[in-house]
Figure 1: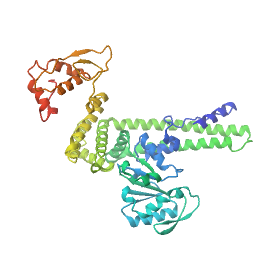
Figure 2: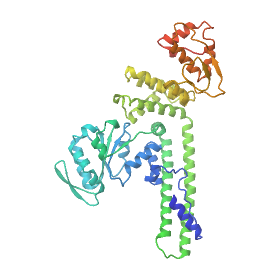
Figure 3: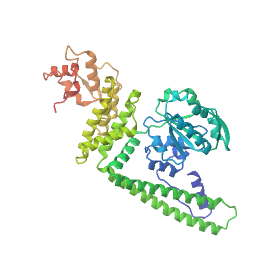
Figure 4: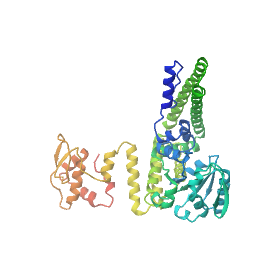
Amino acid sequence: LILSKAISHMCSVNGLPQASIALDEQKENSYACFMMEGPDVYHLNVESLPIDSTCEQNVSIITQQYTKCWSLIVDPLDLLPFWFRNKKNAEIVCIKDRALLSKKLEACLTAGQCLVVTEVYTHSLMRVTPVMDLIRNAQKLATIKSPCKLQIDGKEIECKPGFRLFLITSDNMSTIPDLLVSVLTVVLFYPEKKGIKDLMLNLFLQKFYPKVYSERMKLKESVFDQLVSLRQLEADMLQVLFKEKHLDESRVAKSLGNLSSAFDDGIEILVRSKEQLQVANEITLSGIKCLMNKMATILNDVFIMARLSPLYACGFRQTASLLLTIYEQIGRSSQSEDIAAGLTVIAHHHFFQGYFESDKLVFSLLLALELEAIEGRVFKNEREFFISPFPGNKYVIRGLTHQQCSSENAPVFNFGKRPFDWMTEEQWQSLLMLASHFSWIHDLLDKINKDNKETFWRTLSEGLAPETLPIIDS
């Protein structure tokens, strides 16, 4: 961008036609845009990868050609093997198939190709001699400029430049052996919720609305092709400006004028293509937005639960496939909101059964809070209070033993002492703490011992299922 501005300034000073410099209005000064060119970053969106900034940055680290380190990719959702299969210069092999691993390793070394090893368990990897021999020579192999010979698993193999090794694991990053961390670039490939939602939408359209999916992908390809075309025009303009020191000014002006005109036309086509894609996305999401939000939330929470125990780990495509099957069983004739509600209940029941008793409530509460948040019924401060209660500053509550940092104009309330002998002071303080945050409980506390509701409050305090009681009559 800086170079383009400098060239534009030079053109204006010398009276030459100025080319447009904004290839992409949304281009940011991100790490991904620094490591990769704009069209290449955009093409990640066409390659069945999550569309979010975190994944774009991680892919730019993995694919950059100038790294001296190979990559150990922590991919808990098993997303990257599918992406690597579409790469022309990459061979994929599962580490469990040792005979095929040795064969493909030798073939990739002699051809200067990339080798992708999947289902890697990092501690058992230390006992896989061919791979460890490679890793010990990683620095040398990553920087060679001409063929060389190396001893790999007792065999002398001729290695050509261009060979790169990618190891894909689902292990926890904290358990990776120090030797691997010191030699390899460790990358955590985990999408944001936005990326999960986009992947889920692609699978949903691919299965139930293939025509819509195909049209959407064609529009994305059209935007990408236009970005590539504009990149080439920019390169041609630079070549005209710098290829010779003594060029006829009229010839330079004419060449730049033609290129600039073609560039401006390309910008117009790019803008139209992006507008068409945006309209297509809005139309596609208009009837299924609620459903996609809930599917993405369920998926995200299931993946979060996997952090509690490796026994809960599951791949993205298997989990998404389950949700699509539930959707298919419910039926596509119902309203989107009804399907979303039914899918949530069935999916919760299915995953709930697979967790230990100690983790079942965690999953239910996590999912409930997230679903209520996307509906706008639970806000950040309420979720924070639920997880770790703390005194609020919205209302001053007399009798609250916890120190409050409230403003001078905050309303003051006094609900007296604990109303029942069986109620502990800790329980009463919890109610007062709620009152320092939320006004809906004030009327309840005012009437706590006036409406003959002691049985209700005792059941709420000591019952086995207090969450089923209606707190407010209405």
